[in-house]
Length: 402
Image (tube, rainbow, N blue to C red):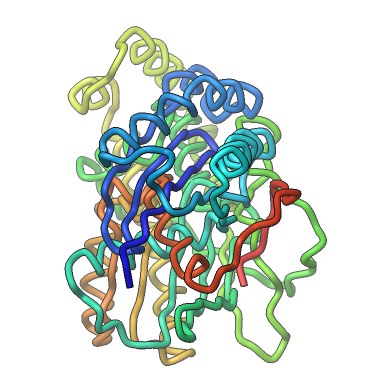
């Protein structure tokens, strides 16, 4: 079969991205325009600002991706775009542009679920390594600023199907990282900062009780949700894309709002407000703070709190994921999404999964966060099956993955 070149476009939240991928297994180009500088003053993604930045960036980003791949609009075989879940305005920028290109070029257009893209980021890189011997069933943990989901993934011919067996009931894990960092005056995005600082604190200094979920999940597929990375309102899109499994199927749900609240209570009872305000002001004067800048403005109490918080989040993610792997007798584990770049999460997963004899695969750090290569890779099986999107499709903020 001749090579198939797919131009992928991703704009679900705060990265404008475009990439060209060959036959779902070789990344030819991958361009990402980040909006961190735009949203940093607000401590989270502001949806309206995100949409405006996508409008500014999408044309040059797509042109750069084509140029780096040595391709033209006419020489690609198909276009792929993220349909959801994500921020409505952000999604619509990418979808509108992709529709216009597909119409003008008379090329097929493929709509891709963002969560499936994260799973295919792992598959893309494993195929680039010539690793085609993945054993099924596969359990995929998709964990980011907007999502914390567990999926059983099956491949049937070229098509993939997914069953959701766990999701967050409230905050996504990445959202908890970002909001705790904001609370402690560490800036945005907070996950990478907490990961670096945690190595300098005592992870056993502060005890975080494990989350306990005492009632069944009452949500249904029809309930809408908004992307959790938004600064306002404070709602988690970890709720997006999570169909409720039948009661007979064991579920492994997550909850992180309690841990976030526990940090707030610790700050209040230990009178940390003054030092936090001083740290926030000092770091605001540094355009691009480095590790030494953070360490110079963090006392031992803060470092211990950060390390203990990260240990609690990582421990909960790993405990529940490996319990699900045992329950469903999976053969392979994927860990993907922005939080998959966390060093402690990777090291602990590799160690504890190995003790269970379970191979675990991660995407590289550049493909852990939102990108368009994963969208183009996920589109390839749909291209083979000729599952093309009608021109009247639109964004789905809470799009489920099935």
